[in-house]
View 1 (cartoon, rainbow, N blue to C red):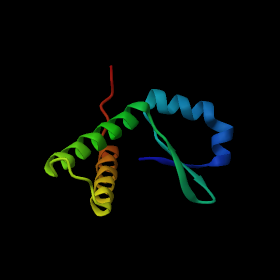
View 2: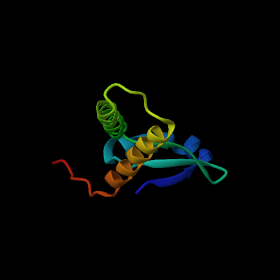
View 3: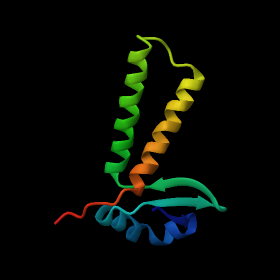
Length: 97
């Protein structure tokens, strides 16, 4: 689960937060005025989300035989990637020895 932090907390705790992300794979949602602004996640998670989005975009393009995505299809593809990423966050992490 992602921890929510304010932009002020980030300024004060950035070193600690980076260590937690790198070593424990913690994730942070950075908020400004109570609204989500950005996320601090391990690079592996970002790469995983990019690979997933790229894979599904290629699948959609293959189904269309080189056609162009409609706005609705592009929106659905993005929402599907978000759902998948959130499901991955809920899965228990395996600790390395």
